[in-house]
Image (tube, rainbow, N blue to C red; front, side, top):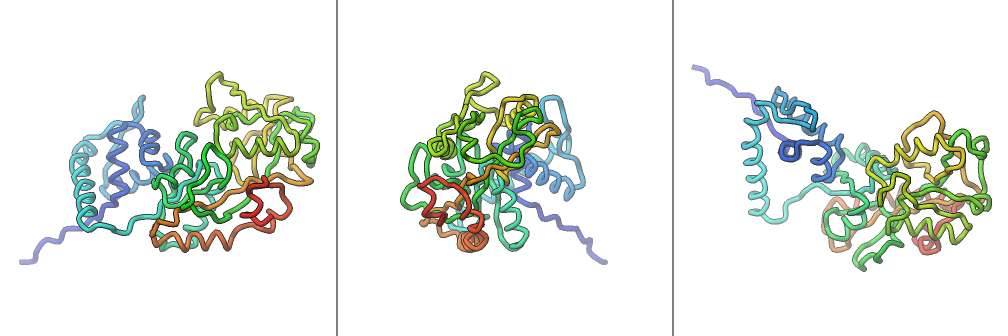
Length: 329
């Protein structure tokens, strides 16, 4: 008599971990923050798990998500899978794991840079992790929570430890964002000297950070006044503050902010983008990593960004003096 064949389902532990975290937190957004990945990544991992199992694991509710009956049955087994995996890793010692690369946010150009790297290096076992203003990309690599990070190597509350290496990744040229009623809305460009007579609204620069120091140094160089006052009466910008900020600027005939070419701002029909020239300020993004980190995925990543660094653009830009040697400007 022929034996019965059972179809095997190989579960992805990253998807299982996303499922367990979402079940415990009951919101995909909170689960994403806990896992330090994007909310979209959490949704994709859970969707993959649901497709493999052929069942829905969550229902949408007013407060977030709730387990379906199938999800409730899976949860204890999923927790057991993760526990077994952790035990296995501990038993064998150093086991290859994904390379974790931190970016400051999903809107940053570094996210697209990493997506390009992954598309052209399909064998790379690499995860993109999202940092925040409270735990920055620099913090994550300094404290070993990421293997590499995109960040400015100078400035900030504390200098980088000596074991943290830096390679230029890309410079990001700046431009003005204004509403259609602003006096500069119809201009093809504004010079850095003209910018020096203006006030720009950058609430994020009120946080002690390497990017706040960048704008302070730009102000010292050209005279521009940087207004860091939050307009929502909170101590700092909210996670969704970019959209609110763009909406406010679009409706104003006086507000302006500095953005950059590789930063993905929310689209608005009344926003106008005005290049800054003679010279163009540019934010220096380096790839940071610890020289004590033996992860095999680091050398090819570093080599990639050394090769693709847009040095030709940097040559015509203004950068803070501290960054010019590394970025060879």
